[in-house]
Image 1 (cartoon, helix red, strand yellow):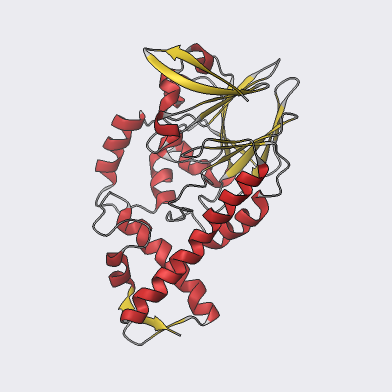
Image 2 (cartoon, rainbow, N blue to C red; image 1 turned 90 degrees about the vertical axis):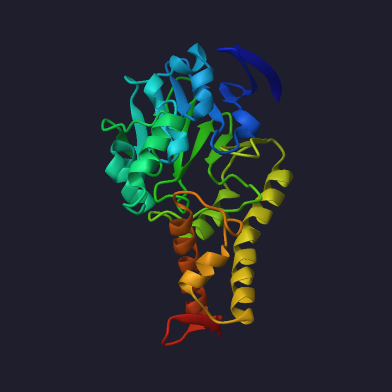
Length: 308
């Protein structure tokens, strides 16, 4: 791996190069609200994968991109789109409405009307948010030929309905996006998310034919397969840890969904942000649905859950 640095707009941005692929690392290794920017330079065209905050500091090496391929649609992956107003933006069809309009993004999040106006103002300020009504839909298996290199989309839903891995060939570089392998664990708190799909995605991602794995956040770059697989296993185990946490809460006393949300499953108790209650409610509900199905919990006539 060739590591060097580039100076852009008074900010030093660490980068890593893998053949025709460059990763520009966001602040704190791409920790939210930032992320890591991937650029693929073919002989005929240059593609940018997602456009996080760091894209605003890269300069010409980002702004000359001919097209953008979004691995999924969230506000932190759209922060550089305003710098590429004429570049085609490609989005998996399941996430396409979320890219094309604010109402589409709100629907994908499942946000409550009580805070959407404040959330929009926050996104416009922090992420330069602007929808792309011209965004183009792609399907699983879509290929972009860039000249001596190509990008292939592998649908990997769960985080969002359209979340996809972008595999650069023949370099063997897989951009796995928000399968970020962080200690926080998988996030499936949007209306468009799916715990069941995320479980299946985590089983399949290990078999993607890659030599390098790049995450949007936190971990950044893996070049050792065994290290990647260990962290993938730990990331997957968080799902079981969350289920055990719910069982512990219910063993202490029966609880309604609302009471479980107050205890928090994803975030620390008392943590607040626009989407936290909605995300906790959906995430906990998805675990409870699985646990009801396998008999590990039951629900009484008052809506209180208890161990099965």
